[in-house]
Length: 109
Image (cartoon, rainbow, N blue to C red; front, side, top):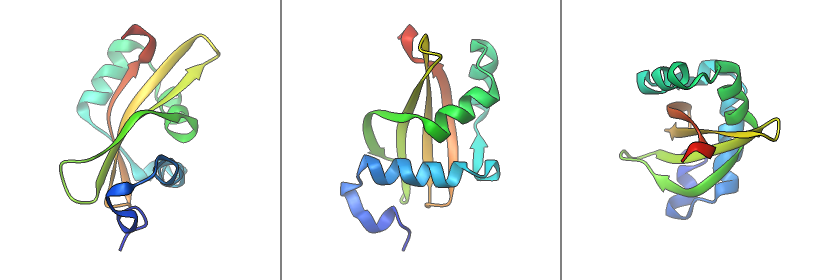
């Protein structure tokens, strides 16, 4: 049983962010959706910035169960130089990899 799955439906945000950080330490564990890649280009958000957000940001909003068993989704946000905030919507899949769904400027919402 995976570390996240063992926590059941009451998954805590702290457990999720710890797992995201552990997985994100190795870029090979991160997959980028075509949508996320397009949005990064469109919004001028560099890959290194998105990686920093995933590796060091905080969850904003609710942690949600994904569409499939073993998936958990959250928006991870971090301020850049105190001026703008970048958000990355990520899925942790089967406690083994991260799928980045989108990357966005949080302060433009």
